[in-house]
Length: 181
Image (cartoon, rainbow, N blue to C red; front, top):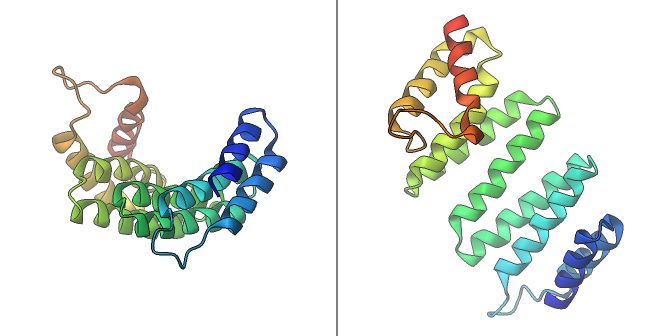
């Protein structure tokens, strides 16, 4: 399994997506999921790589399927944080497909699971995606307000002057949208 996975990574890095997909699929076929020493972490990573390749090819249904499989195997490996990241990625695909309701359902569930597992900052990052959805819906202004206030007061991403790094500054746009609604 690992050899096919590594070969797939090589093809991926060379820009050979079809060959990489073939190698990754061959790798998943080599996994013995009935074995007690199955490497679920690597198997989950293979599916995560497949999802990434499918995303770049705009094959969204394949991407979602791969994220689901990645989540499943990563949960079996015991890495809850990584598994929840895979779930959150599904919401991003739903957003790209214009399925805001599906994205919201996934994001609310992932946010809840982050909090339950003690990942409060990751839950706040997830709220950024929810803010994006709510900023376009005047009927969600109260939900947007709650998320903006929570992010503003609880996020560890702000520096000593209460400014965000460049990679997190979309929050300011959502906060501005809240004041516009």
